[in-house]
Length: 168
Image 1 (tube, rainbow, N blue to C red):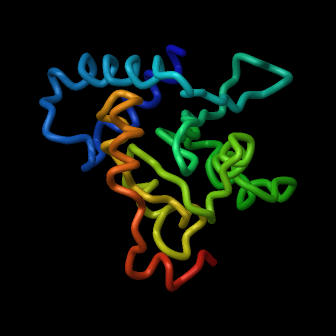
Image 2: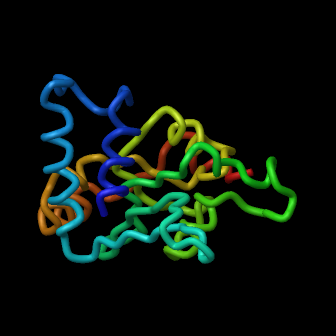
């Protein structure tokens, strides 16, 4: 869990979506936020690691069940293990795609996500590998009951291009 929290907080730190939290307070505040998210009922973390060397972690996916669509809070893959199919032809999918699949999420079908970075933004654009993503950061800002109520009161509506152009 230490690796997960550190990787998540560190990789999100320079995201434009991290908000206006001063850097001197950032780590303390975001570690508290992540603890609260991970303590919610239905939150799960799936870790990709080397089975021959279980302490060698490649990345993780934090996701949550209990909403009308699957929800991803964060996906992190160490830089050396990103885009594996381009680096090693024995891979047909990247680790992020495989992790999402193991979580029961088809990245080309609708799913919510609550944290966004520049990389994730590119991956979730229309026609991109994770084009089913619908950004709903408020779901992470509320407690679980409030988030579910917010989803019910503000259902997913059709967006301009998303419904017209399917994923590539």
